[in-house]
Image (cartoon, rainbow, N blue to C red; front, side, top):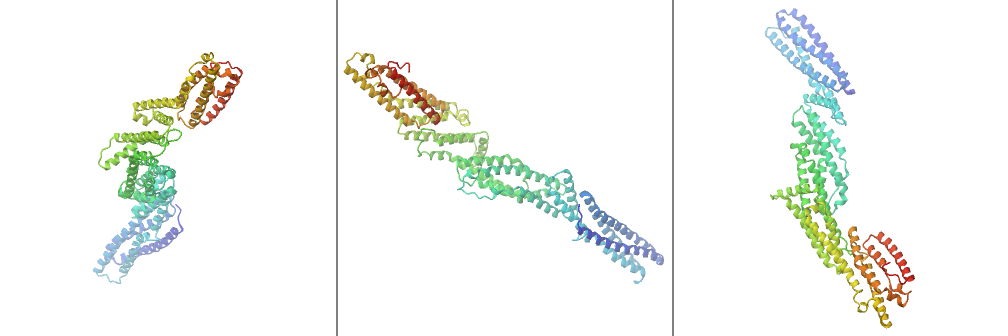
Length: 639
């Protein structure tokens, strides 16, 4: 340890004083030995008085040596040892002075009673000795005064104590031995209070530097969206775990290790003061402010994460922050837990009502799954997930326990079922609002398909296999109904005209007038079919089928429903159409069966795929038209 200049001056000053007193005491001892022979009637009493004074001189000499040793101490432990020995020597010096003074005072009283005159040289020497001993007796008290040798030495120990506490490896074995030795020495000199004050101040400052976090002072109101502070919440969760499991766990151990020899209440009090002033309270209060932001479903998930964090550190927290000194920390923590529980429950119990409030809204114009449906089902899956469900159950149990109500798991699953029931009611209302039956079928088919996709999810497992199978049946039912409603009326054009009920071979034997009338009817039918097909295709080109496999199946069903009927119709009357003008048939044949098939297969595909197939279909139609023009007798089987 480095010695300050002040300490050197103190020692020099003390050394000079000691030399002066030592000289006077040696002179006194010499005088006493001479007077003993001159005052032989009192020789016994004088001889007994010399022994305590000689003891004082020997102790005084030891003090001098220890003061010099203190100047040259190597290392903290050596310095502490020298301070201890010096303190003990000074204490012994004080008690030796008291003993010598008692002997001198008793001797003077005895000699006076025996008739020794007041001006006797021996008596005068004794009185001078008393003054010197009393001055020497003040050596110890003066050493503890400001500027005194022990005062300065103890201050040096406090400075070293403070320096060690700032080190990163403060809890190393070497540093711990030094800290314990310093505390034990300061405690022995009734300076434990100063030591604790220094300890709390230094360790509080060290922790505060780790808690220099900008978001802790952020104001959160009901107008704030949880998404706006999502990053702050993630940081808070991480900082909370670090604070408890690393920072305060370490500080608690450090307190108990450093102050283990000075009483159990000291570490508790010391750690409590550090915890209350170092940053844990602002951290806890920010957690409470999170529950004040705008009340919406995403906030519930964030609050679950916050509660999960607090639940994960609960055991360590309760073990570390105990005792009366940490009562404020525990109170703020209870307030945080209460806010998290209330915030979660308020949102969770209102979820069915929030879904119902969306019922007046319009369904998607493309027949797709409404965002509400996909978001809510995904949300329910998250609530039922392995990480969230146990936390949500625990929160509901706490909330109901506060209300003296027993929690059962059926309350959670039953409430999720209520949410899905409100979604189903919304879907029924939205489906009924569609004026076009085909679009309503696509809408319901998409939504039932969405529910089928919940198989092997937490929500699907909760609802059960029968529920999933029912949605599969409804999905297939609406898919078939869509095909019928979309193309049934159009296909009826190919069968309703009585003039076309006779085959092309039968009409060839009829009169020219009758064949002409039949051709005109066939032309009108094909034109009406092509126009109707284009109208349906154009209108439904913006509709969507969210599931690719389902879209493919529907396209295949449309092809099987429409193309064979169309192909059969053309096969029946193609010869009659080309009989009048072999080069005019392409004017009436807007779609070949293959081109029609390509069109139908392109429906409900993604935009890029649709554009690609449109180009392919256009190319095929041109090729097919050329084939019919150049070979008017080609049958539709070849097409």
